[in-house]
Structure formats: C-alpha cells, structure tokens
Amino acid sequence: MLTDQTMTHLHDLKLHGMADGYEEQRQHPRMSEIDFDERFGMLVDRQWRWREERALNTRLRSARFKMPACMEDIDYHASRGLKRATLEALRSGDWIRYHQNVILTGPTGTGKSFLSCALGTHACRNGYRVGYYVSTKLFRKLRGAHADGSYTRLTGRLAKIDLLIVDDWGMETLKPAEYRDFLEILDDRQGTGSTLVTSQYPTNLWHDTIGNPTVADAILDRLIHNAHLIELKGESMRKRMASTQ
Image (tube, rainbow, N blue to C red; front, side, top):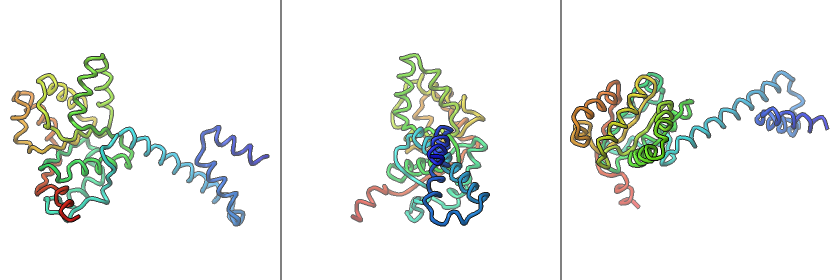
C-alpha cells in the first residue's frame, strides 16, 4: 500500500520520470545492494532525462519539419560542394546563440531541404525553439492572418522563435506588400533570432525576384549580414538515387 501511495504522489507531483525509475528499481532484484544516495541520484537523473526528452519532443512537434533529418545522416560524398568543416562549425550552435543566419542556395534536388531540417533538428536538440515553413505556405499563412485579424499575433510568434527556417524562397512571385511583410518579420527578429533561408536562386538574383530594389536591399541586408552562405552544386540527388535503383 505504501508503494502504491508513493507512486500516486509521484504522478500527482508530475514526477513521471521518477515514478518510472522507482518502478524499475523495485523490479530489479539486486537494487537493494546499492546505497540510498546512489539510488536516489538515479531517480533524479531519470526524472531529468524524462523532462528533457518531453521538452525535445514538444520542440520537434512545434517546428513541423518537412522531413525527419539529422546531421549524422548528411552525405558529404556527393559532388555538391558541401564541406564537412562548414557543417561542423554550425553544429556547435554558436550561430544561433549569436543570432547569425544561414543561406542555402543551389539547384533543385541538391539537398537544401534536408540540410535545413537537419540543422533545425539539431537546434531543437540544443534547446532552441524552431519554426519550419515552406515559403509558399508561410505567405499563405500571412495572407490568412491579414484576413482574419491575427497578423500581429502570428508575427509576434515568429519573432519569438530562436530559429526561423524559410524553405524554397523565391518559388513564387509575391505581391509588394508580402515582401514588406517578410521584411517586417526580419526586422522583428533582428538581434534576437536566427533565420535560415533556402533557395534555388543565388542571392545576386534576389533583386530580380523581389522587384522593388529598396525592399530587396533591405531584405538582403538583414539576411546576409553575419550570414553563413552555403552554395550547393551538381545534379539532383533524387535523380542520382533513382538511377542506382
């Protein structure tokens, strides 16, 4: 009865990890040979790991990545100009800590989305809040927010996340007001968060995409300043993988 009461109290206190560890200790035949301090330390460690795993899962769900990806699975052998040293430097997370940006450019199929999701997943593991958006869906969401009056609330949320990922920038021509919306988002995040943008177009062509030279200059200034530029090359990895099957 005392054990049942202890388990109930642990769950009532939301110490679910400790409750699981306590039950495991009770089931272990030789656990009584370990002194109290060590056993208690094991329970605290189990609760800490439970909390950290729960928080990580919450960050991953909130990010809504396009695909599961991790840095350990990045392919450095394909001839696409990707250097291991560059990605290893980003692995530390200092670029997010110092509110720097990453711009990934290259032809379709060269792995930009995978790399952005891998970097985003790693950021989640490091405790950062991440938001992943395909650019077309982001601007569709912004248009809807203007229509229903939730624009300020949406941009407020975007301003608070540590890493904003905008995938496939430049895939559609936007209205001038939408480019200004994006500029406003970047302004709100200036000095408080990092932004990762992927695009098929190199940055020297973004002026042509945006159209308005003043807005284009402002967007590029906020993104490229202190940015890590990664330009991928080569043919589509999807095409290469299909030819080997």
